[in-house]
Amino acid sequence: MTKHTLNPILAYEPISPKSPEPLHAPKNLMTKEEVERDALSRIDGWVRQFKLKNTINCDFPDELIKMFEMTTMIVREIIDYCIENGFRPVLIT
Image 1 (cartoon, rainbow, N blue to C red):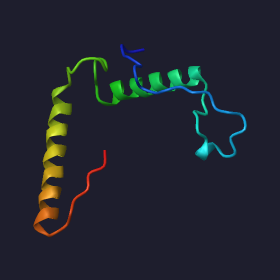
Image 2: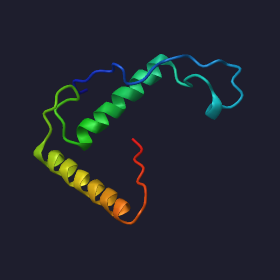
Image 3: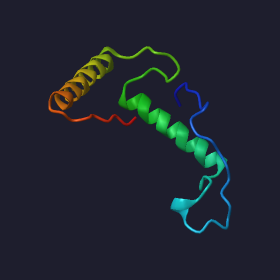
């Protein structure tokens, strides 16, 4: 496992057994242990995918920094195109 932190990756609340449909359940369908295991797995995936040393500091590989800068430039170009053509760009994060 890589060095990481779970705070505040996911909130845990046990689900009520009377919830009618899982998609509309007001609480988490997973146990606390499943949530933690899923979060650790996701973090490990990010570390491998982006070649990170860990998820605590900002020591990013040069390749990832270049990719971020290129992606930022593309998004700016899309926004400029939208504005120039009378569109109202909407960014959802």
